Length: 270
Length: 214
Image (cartoon, rainbow over all chains, first blue to last red; front, side):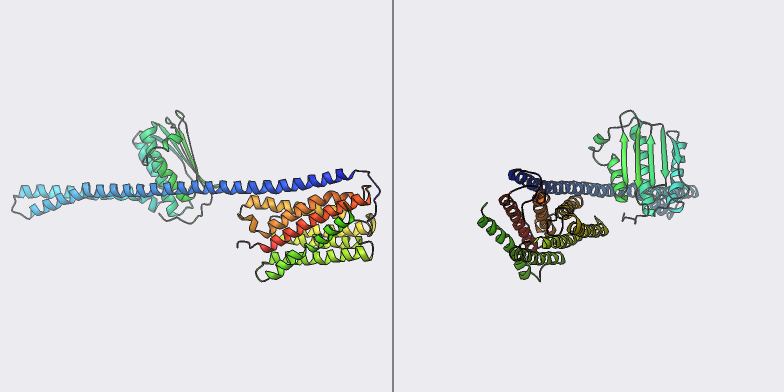
């Protein structure tokens, strides 16, 4: 290579340029390595938080299920059990030597007890799984529930519901339970007079719940033990794979929005 | 820098390509397809280095072979990057860049600088494109966060080598035909180039030595 014609530059300027470019390249590689490690660390921390949250939700779900079983057991024992015991006692007495009047009285009492037992069993069964939900679907069941609440004159419920839902039975049950939980919270704690329940199917499936109650500090309520409702709602929403958001401030009511990103999601085991 | 030191560095630079070649022969059965491509690059580089060295002594002017080597080196390196970048960067973009460099190299050799002068258009542009592909690989790695142990990833080491070699040499490539410096200074510059070449060949060797996680 011969001597080139052109700019007259001292060699050290060119070497300085070379060194500068080299240092730049080293800096880029070093930055990349440090930043990549930091990102991985953040990702791990996030995964740990997520795992802890999942564990907490699962624990809560199990506790809620146990509580429900205890409640059903108590209902069966305290009401059904005692009524059937009384019925057996009356039937045993009927087999004895009684006056006609006494026998008729016992027959009436036995019939009353049997009717009460049937009513109680029906109530427990409806609590476990509402028949309207099974036979008519989510929206008619919500409409019926809302009408019952309206009839008590404690709450005005406005519903905006589509004609049909394309959800699986599991999804419908989960949404119904979430709504029940929300309404229970409103009745017990909010002091509200109006509730709005809106369901939308497009562009994505969405449920919006609003009340005009006294609101609450959402982050403070999460510190309360399970049974206050929010954890139930969170765990059911999470099991659905839904995105959800509470908006609540002291004095301005509460709103809850839930959206199903993919409403054709396969049903999760209950 | 004395001629003796410059010659020593040049010979050492040429010999440094033997390390990745020996490693690839030793580990041929264990290396993956990407690493085999790196092995072919090392082989092509050895042939190129020998031809350029012999031509410098026998013919006096080895620059025509540098035109050819620029294109071949670019093609192989871009195919190596393609394996790590697709579908992040479309394969047709990389193939388009190859065609661009081939065309530019021909234009540079025939019209711009001429085949007996240094290819100060094609070589720097090829360098810039390869630097960009290396940066794109780093960006892709950061955005996907799939590769945890980068030190076991062959393409990471190729990227390090490309960034250090082509960034360091870019000023040398651009200034060779356009800066008036003494022959001694030119010797110094190309000795610096030889050092960068040793670094590049070392990263080829590391890329062939590491065992990536599946």
